[in-house]
Length: 307
Image 1 (tube, rainbow, N blue to C red):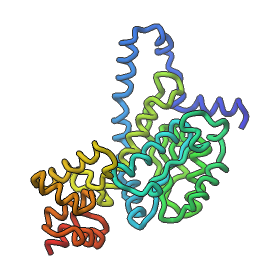
Image 2: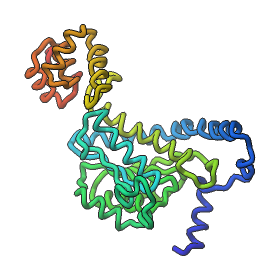
Image 3: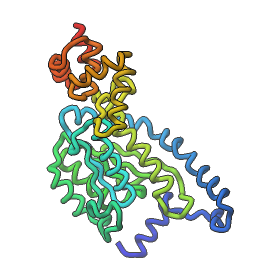
């Protein structure tokens, strides 16, 4: 593609559109710019809402595969890639997932998290190599993320993953995108032109973050990683999370501090096990067995213990 062709392609994208009414924004008072920006951001949830049926369908498909042991893999370049890495990195402390279960790939590798890696986003071959290193299977899901919906790295990742039989999702912020067309599940959250022309870390980035929040969080809910709205699989890796673990057990059981400490000690600090110990009135080994037999789902383990 020539430079002229690329300029023409970008000019046709909603996310790249120039807004002449904002041409003097740099001369406005700071508070007025902040108000404008805040007003722009307010429209993002509505744009996401229009895609909820597509998002829900994608989540159900992801959960089905992850329930069989599959992985959730995000692939993107620049801001989109960083958002995928962020979402993936937050799953282990929140849901006690194995770090290999939800993976974020960014064009150019870890270095690209903090600096621009020249040409990486333009390489479909690089995307194929990154996926091949993970040995993608039919139980895995690959989510290509790109505000423009045309980024070669994201499109290449989805096309290669689909050829390998994996579930594919394309998350873009323009209609009729190549990324959504390449994926089994296309999600196009159209937030409109940015306050700063082409700066898709703004509304487009916010929209992508909201959708990724849903993809990972609701998938984990479907997999039994929560009990109601409690993070019962939280990994207590610091003082704050240890305090949160005690509070979660208290909210789920209504037990006394002494009973909670005893149950957490008996469960080796595992919140889900401690709740089962208290609610089902079983010992630590029995709680572990019930959870193993129930696929780690606390509600199922409680029902099993009662039956």
